[in-house]
Image (cartoon, rainbow, N blue to C red; front, side):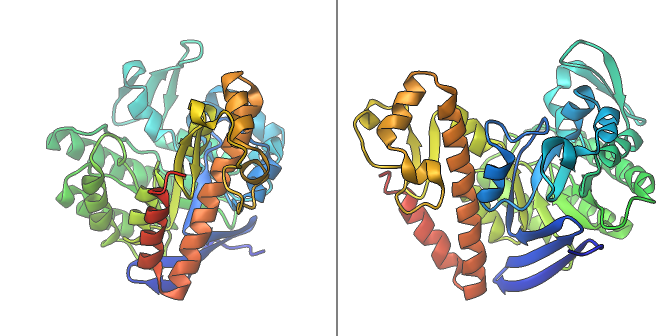
Length: 373
């Protein structure tokens, strides 16, 4: 354990990086995948099972937790770690993504976002200062600045307006974060849509302000993969090598491989658990849809070589039966198995970078997915 927050580079293979983030609540091996625990729970998976998959850190959601049960209540109950029985690192997003996704319910001005709660219609305000206050009440290990995320495609003028607002909010977030407990970190978020010059300007301005780490935001929101990757490259080129880099809301396993290749260290996405709740399993053979009748009498597990009990010990026939019967256990087992697959992929990535064979590993992994076992 350490009292400080720091990033240490352990190995490089091209632009791909293997490293370790140190926090008072434990180390985060990078490249890292963070399971999403929106409402203080990784949906349908027990915390000890999330940990058993090799997850070093999970993500919580500022917007949802401020609405229910409330940040002040969580603080009174001992903080988010104690509340959800996860003593390891937690990153909280700032609510910026909900600024985009709840566009019909909100209004943005220089001071804050004013929005109507999707739960009961109550009018609420989320400013940069309040976002930081909430995340500090939750006692997150990694805190994100409040930003405005624009759904793509969008006009250059709209993207530039949101980027510049996000930079002004980044400065306010940094001031609000002053005095945070030792070992907590604040990340700035690069915005700029699909406009390279705006991405470059945003990244340079954030580096000048100085953050513990940097996220690339506003991607995987409607643009093609090649555009996303171009914006990742443009952003990473401006970010310091001694700080972690986080690509927000990504994603599919192939997106992760291609982003690691471009120097990204951290990822989060709802896909593993969302897919698990919809009968889709991620495996080294590709995606398997357990709704399909072809699995009805298949005695094989999802993957006999997996270390994860749901993937190794239950037949595809049984998982198919649970899905068709609408049993809750189907969501539990498949979500657990999917997180385990993602963490197995990340472990393979880290080992391949250390061995200097990341590109070979990425190609072998894609060949494996094509097998569709």
